[in-house]
Length: 79
Image (cartoon, rainbow, N blue to C red; front, side, top):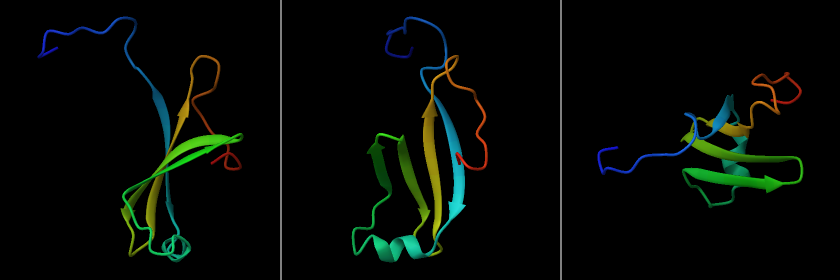
């Protein structure tokens, strides 16, 4: 808006589930490829994994969902 450019359509361009988890062993599996963001693209899921604290193994997986065709909740098996 500050640039005088408006969006078309409704609010909320995308929706995400944010899944916080701890996995200290994940850093070892990265084998020197430490980064802030990791992207997962495969037939079962698409996600962005955010490294909040590599040393302590604190991560957040951001998984998109598409309302109204997908629910806004996850079961523990899906998370």
